[in-house]
Image 1 (spheres, helix red, strand yellow):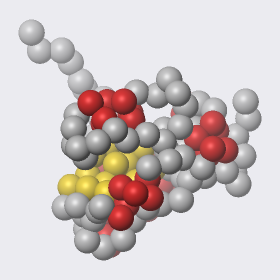
Image 2: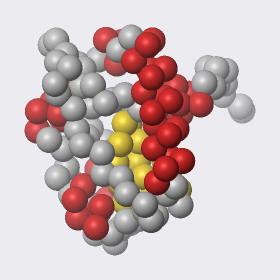
Image 3: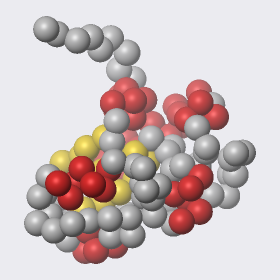
Image 4: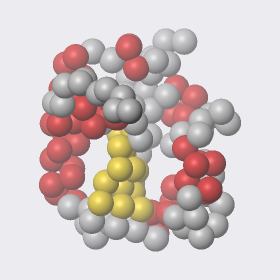
Length: 133
């Protein structure tokens, strides 16, 4: 599947948010569906529902409802791709800078990266993860 520079997902950001979920970049499937983490096999929504964080089941398409409740969504890189290895280093670097500006501008109470890779991209953290017994 090839990527299209036209495909993306909107940011759900504004001042006063309690929490913002940050993905790597939209997948093609999600961008075409217009929903974050839209693929049925994606574990984001089932895990979030199981956490009881919102007190009810949540699913793709609930972004607007959650946004009204103070929860935002964005990505490190906004361009949709079939695989993250389709992103260039320049896109990742530019996206990381833009994300840091967005976090500073909107100043949410808390953020959560959906995956460690996005955190590493955004804050230039080297991949030195190891298992501690």
